Image 1 (cartoon, one colour):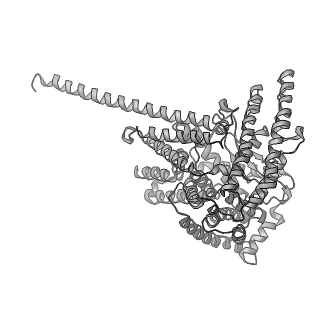
Image 2 (cartoon, helix red, strand yellow; image 1 turned 180 degrees about the vertical axis):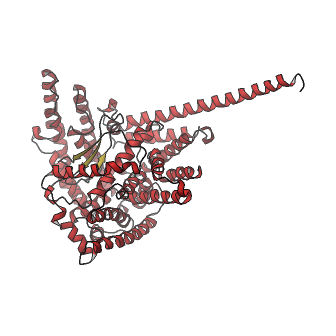
Image 3 (spheres, one colour; image 1 turned 90 degrees about the vertical axis):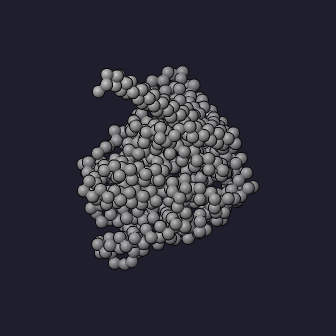
Length: 592
């Protein structure tokens, strides 16, 4: 070795080290800039969507209610998504970590789908019987939901938020009048369901009004002066703002809107309706599937599940065809054993107790977030489905499984085990809470929602019941099949109504012929699909994809496959479009 070689060699190493250090520094700076951009997107989003911020437990915007129906608000949203779509182009995939690449893909998808949605005039349909923000405000007003009523400032925040809501209510009537002129009107049957909801809020009994309830729950720690001032302010708010505005809305619905209501059921019968439905399919399934493809998938699933149902019918020894068995299950008093709402809630607590010892068989990670089972609030339970309300991000408000029990004596329990797995544990509660608790995810991904993934996971969770100690009763297993059938039927009916121009009655009859739900429940479900085209498609399409990915992983990994690890992979991703989930699972399988 020559004497000068070692120093030269060291100098070359030094140059290489400087180059690597410089490259690493650039990557770190790039990652920091990317993280900052994602955080800014999240923070600006909270300001634009203050109701969502409240649900997350962020109190900064609890007094805010923008006029979501104004042109200015639409323009602000358009600018917001356009700006961040452009900002994404500054970040090259090769400079990002695998998790950052997923975040980039999710944010691009989010911006694209929302910009696409802004091309359609959803503001002409500001209210419906199930989905719209006026119902959310009713939940908040009860004082038992996400809007806090613990401090004097909380009570003042709500007064300000209601002021904004009243502006929205006034604009809603204006937009619906515009909709009548332009051909954007709800079906008549949906309007008939909205009218009683508005009529309740127009009730002139101030001290028994829903929006007055926080006064009755006022903390004893408040000073006498604060109590007096807030009580007067709430009386004035209910008497002079809320009741008059709801009276105006109710009068408009009864005297004008109902007469203009569509006789058709599908969204095809509004301007640009077919293009809007295609957008809704993409938005809710996060796939490129067409309405016709989904309709055919639905027909095949209905046929498959029907064959399984026939086996249960034979097992219990029922004499008659499947349609007669549906009728029997709908009305069998043995499946309606309760007389009080608390008994129904206790029944779900028992289901929860049954599965808890077996969750370790399927999951390595379980949420730390609290969980409760509650009866749905009275003002909305007659038209509500069982649902999960997610916990706040900081965990101070638990996840809540709401059960509507309008009449405990007619409450049929045959599908409750599957219902609990879907809406509660390990369905929405695991999926949402584990996402929120995952510190590896940026904030915007902890709170984002895609129905294809979220509802797909919840429906997939229903299939785990036997491992968790459920479905030992053949009627509960039939209930599990019925709930799966219900989601398969949705593929047929939603596309039938909005693509194939089925009538409401045709859709109702198809359900009556293929599932055991009560006629009243089926009518509510069909009208749900009418109100929000495409949403009902997400459940089965997502479940099929999650099951397909599991089967693929199991086949390729053989003895290395562990269902707990698979579930961890699915749930640690957070809520993502199904295409992105598939890419992740393919990468996980390839890593073995």
